[in-house]
Image (tube, rainbow, N blue to C red):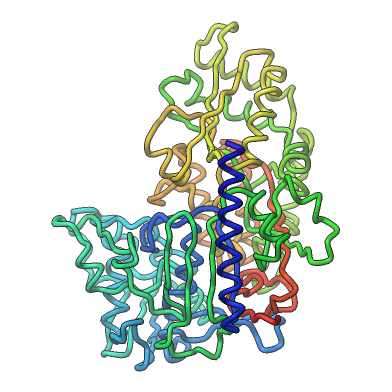
Length: 577
């Protein structure tokens, strides 16, 4: 394996050197970055993989885009396909005029028919696209969109009842289920799921019963419309984008070429960074110590809480359905060691609402800084550091054994499954393999199962024999409405990563939603929701992610600091050789 890694790294360095020299000779501005995994498809409607964010942002077109302010201190929304910001007709109706110059990379026009077709396919009840909720119910709720999407073959909700309308060739109307601000409407139509799709290729890839399409599976089955277009895509090696001469706002973008390499291994990334062949690097737990004092290092809080899903339906595990078993697992996690020593300079978290939740609310008060968020932290810490309590872990495991009628001398082996390239979770699993037999006096053991080439969600569709599965899902809407970070764990979310659902938890989520326009009341109800989440152990929260990143000296960032909800805006950066 080490020889193969060395060969891969050597080949990558040679290819990179050739590309860099060629770019330098041409005087082109080339931005060089990386992704850990390639995209399973370029169809952003039907994949939860975050790797799609990159090509869709560069090569896709949306109704709106978030762009940096001129002084670099914040960001604002501008029309992308839209000609202007949404025009409010009444409390729940918004008209969106479209640019007449907007077109695909091949010159075909983009108009209201394009937008309506794209949204109709995204919500199609037969296609069951995994990202449908990002249009139906994200920052805003589109009228009847969710009901239409989730009806299956019942045909009880007609497309005409959905709040997406064509007014004329260059005007789209959005009708919402509730009142929202212009900013919320704009933000709804910047996420990658809402990028328009090219109808001729989408239809050409459709199977006979219209339950799937091959759109985006290859470059021949994909059409660009953004500021850049694909120059090449060598799967599992690199994606290269070049300027799209048909794009209508070229002045916002400064790179001539964007080179995104697929580099799963951190050692290879570090080597390229040290050779000056990458313009950014996010160190992991094994490399952060080397760079923590580097003046190029920047850090910021994250929307991400790393957690562990617990399989509540493993037929091989006699404890899997027991809430006391899940509680035992919760208390057995030494999060301080895992966050600080294994994940590296991260923060332990026995709670789930992230540190950015509420940051974009009118008051700017985050949930974690509020009296309600602090009360949950205090409660968790009363059990032990970030909820770690071996005594409580043993107590609840004993209750689980009694509840499940297991003899006291039974040894249960748990299967912890994760992507083989994830070094932090691998080290965590190995740590728990040593800790669990000690904490649980030999009653619980852990074995490791790994997978590669698929997402965690896809892996769990292939087997029910796993017990513990590391995961992390972020919800941008939680920056405004903190409770929405729990959205993915509702039974109503089609691509939910867990398989345990609780009526009390679901009902409290609905309560939070009913008071979301009263921020104080929402924070109070979010505390109740988070306490139910912890008590029922919907899954096991572990680590609050703190993001560390370095940028090359040649990269000129468009912002002066990290901006929540926008980031560093590297897409709008420039190159200064």
